[in-house]
Length: 223
View (cartoon, rainbow, N blue to C red):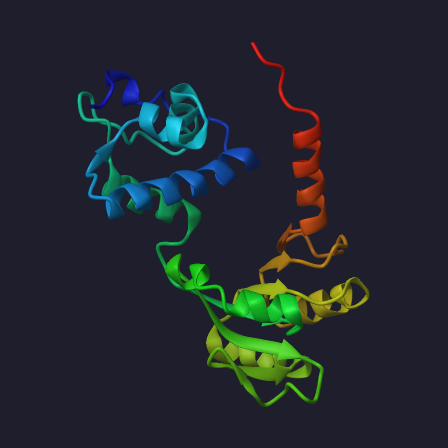
């Protein structure tokens, strides 16, 4: 049952959308996809918020950054909101993806099926180990990093994943930038020095575990 307050507030005039809002969009997208999979045609801000641990007001405020999506007496049409969020995130189009570094982490990432489900397809892999170059992993050819520019141009690659040790990460990033890569997901625990036009997101798994351990040893006060 939808709540009438699912008609969101007017969008903000500020063009700068907080990163936390964008992160929550991805969470909303996953839950909406789960709801559709389970046969739901509509949902509400209350239901979405409850599923994710947010308030209904937070859900409406986040969506209001991008427009008006709810219907009085109905709530949100799941498929329609999925399409809208994908357009906002840029995943309403397929993305060709490259990965650099084929150690344990790189191989694990290549086997992750969630990328393709959300519209990201790894089309090329790069390494500098002669034993890996020329082979195929998960159906993806492995090239030498020196061939990055040519391969990126051939496959129209704009996004890349770095999964190399920290000492090599900046060199790899420089090669990717020179190849025309516009966005880098960096799994090396080091801050990259990149041109302003290149977007990067760092994923440090140790930091994530530190945050988790903090939340365990510092539980919220009851009551």
